[in-house]
Image (tube, rainbow, N blue to C red; front, side, top):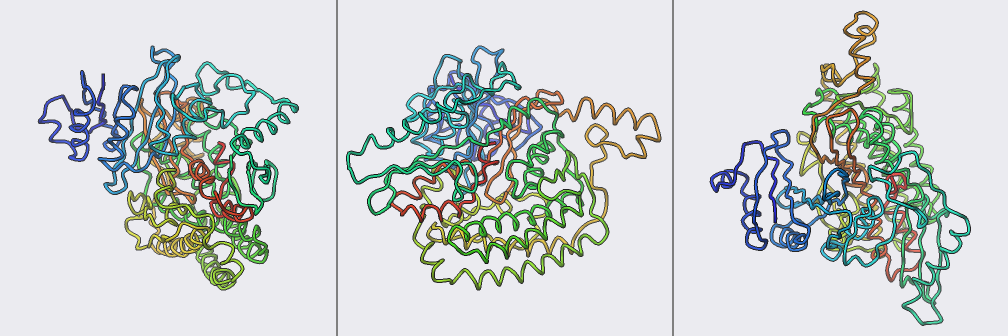
Length: 588
């Protein structure tokens, strides 16, 4: 049985006339699937809220045939995300949810399969390589079994963990600690696992991390190297900074989640705020005022510059160039000072609110921003003269850490790491939001997909962010910064203290929180590391039923072992710095 479920703006039935009236791209998909999959029953379901949220529900036995058809015939090149959802009251307890992207057609598709608690679903790790880690996460969090998966181990929790924490019957406050002696045994088992396929005496097993200056966070890399220190095999262990962000989202209301999003990519925390708030606003069906949109755009671009400078500066330190690190971090501090003047915080700012902004810009703030941007542009030129043509830097980064465009697509790369391979895709251009469609800016792309190209792409993106910011300063609109809806935005202090209606509105919103209608939504933005997406399911209450964060670092690190295979171990350190892995975003 296969069921076609499209969230479409018009009422649909199973008649041919209705199919032909819908988007031709999706109509073609349906016609093709009818030829490869038995269709005992199928239907369109009207959900007029979200015109762009097309969902296809498929019998789990047919998932591979459907995915191959979507990838090869309809050019859904990217598996953007894969996750589980728990419905314990249902006979088939779990949903496995796939989010696909067809960049050529600027189309997205959600594919769902229902899976029973004792059942398994075929793995698609050989259709998209990024599915390997995503399926491991779905098993770790929910216990969903993927038949044919080559390495079904836990990925975010430790190997002694009992149970599956995102199941609805798992207590949110339950704690499980790992024994120290078990950790020591893990090292021996990992060494034996990686060395098992080799019988050469001149190979060596090297452990790096989880506490090591080259990892820029709590990561662990296990490598098999030969006598020339070239990497023959590598495995990555993550999860050391896992806080179960998604479980905490289920126990807090929507505005209370915003401070938790700060702790994802903490190098550009406002971008997490805006992406999450936009997702909930889309679910509710509201659009923030133009002034709030422009403020978000300014703050996001400042955050992008800051994030790229952290990446480049830390990468330079890895290679021994300490001067550039201090230059770039000085500019980062200037941006932090701007944030502090805006909201009182520097690192984890919680600037946004559902329905708008927490703070309006103070008088003179935009002028200060303009001065800071001028300083950044001057410093950027100095860094380029110091680094870009530096012989040592070029020799260490050119031709190392290469990942081809085809492999980047397979691993679900987005952002600068994808564009460095030569694939031009930027959500701000392809699926514009806020005022990005009114700004003239370029999308830099690389050629070789090596460490040097990733550096060049980020350097050029800083220039484009400066261009965008100057346009924003000139075109900042007047007006409110929040939507005028008492069910979404807290009333002013004057109204709370001045009249009973304002007091009651404040009380109800604090106690019950924002309550979006029942439904589901996936929304994305172009964060500093790539596509940052949130998949939110609402049951109509003040707390989300499910939140899945599509963290760009997760897919990027999934392809790291292929990127550095055959490279010198020292070059792998440079490559790791160039992909900018942030442990808070990676582990969630």
